[in-house]
Image (cartoon, rainbow, N blue to C red; front, top):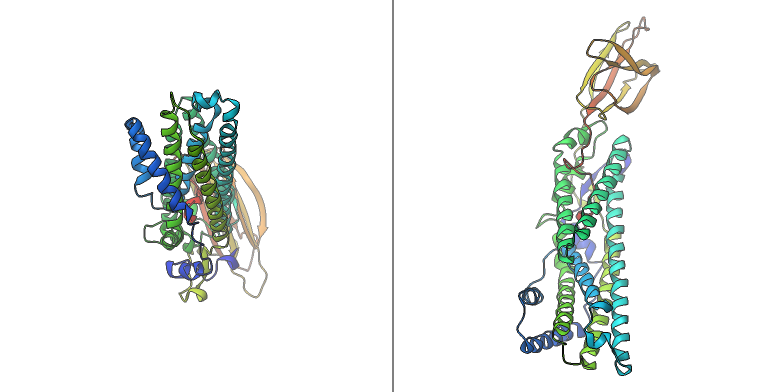
Length: 444
């Protein structure tokens, strides 16, 4: 993987600004703001029929206030509001005057059915966008990680972590949690991913060993994931350019939900007019059309967005490299050993070594054995000769492990050995999470 990492530096805000120049976002349709104002006016009229309930007032305050700032948070907010709207549009929750629709009201029912279907379709598209974007980011970062057992560990833990997160959501729903409760949990999970990502970048906890081990994770990657989501980091450029349009759409979907909720709550004893339904239809169609355009646009931006660039392109120095290999000389007829202590089963013993060759092509014996507390030795990795090797195994017993390099068979030649070894503790769910749970770095 060296060729993939050499000379890389993280993207900077200045570099992203040049990149985003190639992706100008078309302005929203003029009628977006017009429809927001119409919905707001109609909602105020409905408030005159009866005062807002506390929940309605809270929703109205949110719809009329400043949207949340970050791109990904707004996408989650839109997803939440879509689900709330679908909930309201369900046939069982429509006003009785519509549920018992006469032939004359058939058009109203069909319009609401159509709006419901369109929102379900867009909700699914947004979910798929978020899933694919997260997978894309994960795979990008994995490309820059050493392709050894750590990759498998990280992938396995990511899958396990996501299963646990999904189980949390399902448990909340099954216990009667609201849509709002569900999205509060989902957003907390997203923020937890960010915290864990920053911890990985700092190489703390379990990852202090895992990240530093062997060939090493490029320091440029660690620097990148520590600062990508900073308030004034590289993604700030994205927020400034593309955020305002998304913020407007967030406000629009909140207004649509508020209008439907107020209309449903004040429908008793009066017929819902076709004019109201017509405005709802226009607003829903405009919102969904504009949101889909934004989603397609931002997907293209994300897919092509640079995460790392060459130092030459950035005009910066080559990224730092970490090298923690040790070197030793093993005389002819001698051995060299390292003893690693493992405190828990399912730890990993790992090694990477090579001979510093002279003009002669040389090899050295190597084996690994377990030493019990009583001193009994059990062969784990059989003796073989190598000029270099990289490997690992998962332990089934706690205790001591001897890694032995054997030059006893040589009568004349010393061997110059370059090596790195480590005992890596089990990666426990909840202590640190994996690399990319990194969906956050691209703001979704």
